[in-house]
Length: 380
Image (cartoon, rainbow, N blue to C red; front, side):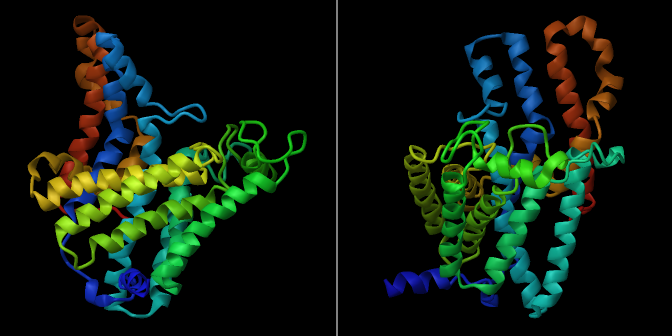
C-alpha cells in the first residue's frame, strides 16, 4: 500500500524534474477532434441524412445531437472531453510556469485573468452579453464558464494538496454532489428525484441565478462541483502523460483506467442516473472513462506508433481551440461560404446543405491553418 501512495505522489505538480519540452501531439489532435464537431463537423455529418435518408445516416444524425435527458449520445461527450483536455493542459502549463518562477502568486495572476476571460467569453457567446440588455443576459450558461470553474477548482487542488489528496478531494466532489441531489428537498416533489422538474440541482439553479439563468433544464451551480471533478480527471491523465514511464506503459494505464472508470460509472448509474444536463457524478465517471479510452487510442496511434499525418487537420484546429469555439458562436461562416456555393443549389438538390456546411467549415479551417502556419495562437 505504501508503494501505491508513493507512486501516486510521485506525480506532484511541484516536481520540476518532470517538466518536458516534448509536446504530446495526441493531446493536440484529440482537442482538435473534439472541436471539429463543434465548429462544423456536426452539421456536415447530420446533413448526410438529407441525402441518403437511411438507417445509418439517421443513426449518425441522432448521435450528433444532445440527448433530451437520461439517454446518452456521442455529442454529449464533447463538453466533458473539452474539460478533460483542459485538465491535461494544466499539468504542462503549471509545471512549465513553476519551473521558470517558483512563486505561486505569479501563477495565480495568470489563473485569475484566464478565469475572468473565460467567464466573459462564455457570456458573450451564449449568455446574451452582446445584447447589452440586462433583462436578456444569462450569467452562467456556457461551456467556457464550466471550464473556468473546473479550472479554478483544479488549480486549488493541484497547487496546495498532494496527488493522493487530490484523488480523495475529486471523489469528495462527486459524493457531495450526489448527496445534494439525494437530501435537498424540492418543494412539491421531495428528495432524490432525477426528473426535469423535481431534481434539486435545477431547483438550486433557479433560486441562485433567478432571471439570469438559462430557461432550460440545465444545472450549473451544483454541477460546478463536478465540472471540477471532470477537469481533475484530465489532470490525473496529464500527470501520467508527463511521467517518465515508457510510452507503451502509459497507453496501458490509460486503457485500463478508462475501462475501470467506465464500468464504475455504469454501475453507479443504477442509483444515480447519468444525466448530462445535470452533470451527475455517474456521468463524470462514465464520460471520464470514454475520454481516457479516446486519449489512449489517439496516444497509441500518434505517439506510440508515430502515425501522425492523418491528424494534421485536428492538430491545426486544436492549436487554437478557444478561438475556434468563440468565433463559431459569434460569426456565421456559412454566410461567407454562400458567396461561393449558393449558385450550386439549383443543381445539387439535397446535397446543398452538405456542401454549404462543408464550405462554412472550410472557411474557418483555412483561417486556423493560416494562424497555425504563422504561429499565431490565441490563448486566454
